[in-house]
Image (cartoon, rainbow, N blue to C red; front, top):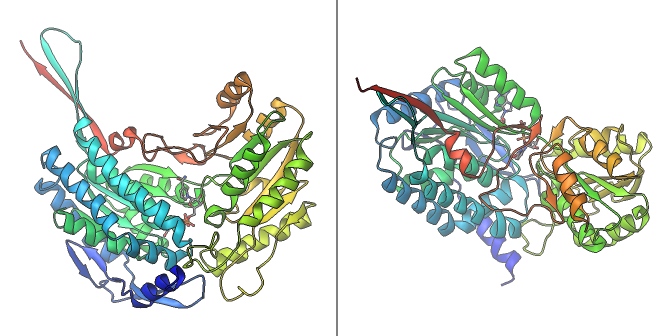
Length: 495
Ligand code: NAD
């Protein structure tokens, strides 16, 4: 049986959970509403999912608060909480096929990428934040001998995680794992385009021993369930990953309600700068990979390729040759390197950016349309534009699709100026063999992440987040568990 057939058979047999998860139980939405989730590779419905609104959010907040106050999780001994986190990681690994299938069907990512990337990294995220739990320490400060001053950390209370569709399980793991590890109760609101894997995660988390009410999932639409969470007086923090537009709304909702803490991981328009002394073949491979992986639906996708004018033509020729590795196809086939975009709406949005690129004078050198024979799905060909200038729309706006834009520069200063000419500042890379040039670029680029002679390398210790309108706060890394705690000063008068 070939691999694609095996995945199709598993997909035909899978019966996803579709209810909400509140208080340790799968339940229908209070109003009994449901919404369809569609497979973007075929356009066909996968399931009807319970659609939560403000009423379900209120229920989830109440049970999460009760569980938090009971101390059943928030005051569990760190090593016991750690053991539960490890069991969650093991549970994800044990259900790797199911998680991969659910995200593949929901949002079109290739099954290979899920099995080799999203699923193991999600398990690792629970393991890492489990390991972090008993590394959080307080401090006794050097102060007046007549006093003992201790600085301690406590959980925040109830944390709501609002997540996007581009890495459904992995973005949920990045948000939920540090919040749980820190001792909070959690309510997860997945994106409405990819609601299914969060419900399997709920089962794994419950089976691992997280007490009832500590972890809850309320599927629903952003404008109702997401907004209700962000406006709730009973939520102490919103951990948000998604667009800059909605990230800004989260800050407004916090101000309109209880001044809850907000961290936002938002959009990007990340540059890769290729200097004349770069190892060109390697640079090209990374530029191709990091605009087409996951169909370009990646916050850190390197959608701006800044290439020195002396190597521009050679770069473009090599890029086009190498880009043939990315062939849109059936995401359930492990040989497929590129699936469909998440929805018809997203496909149309990306195609409209391609039209804008052409209309504004960009030179379409590769792709640019819908691949033949795949019209039923939401596919877009891997696409590359040359002759792009920094003022053009496709050089400025986040497209969130497989569309690269090549721009020329004359010298280092001009490259840095173009790189920084963006409202975003998530990721970046510089390709050079010169140590001083690399260090100067790393210092001068306004981005949360600078890679030198690589892209998308990293591990759990790497802070993930951006400068400027790419958001505030960081995912992964040790500081993230601290961001899910609050600082308390205990000043004891010794007389
Ligand atoms: P989105 O902002 O449309 O939605 C994200 C989440 O917010 C979803 O759960 C959605 O239901 C919810 N939401 C939407 N409107 C809301 C509202 N009015 N009130 C409350 N909640 C609301 O983003 P998306 O299209 O799902 O994801 C793509 C975006 O995510 C891109 O901009 C991408 O760059 C960004 N992203 C960033 C990172 C990062 O680490 N910086 C990682 C992944 C994705």
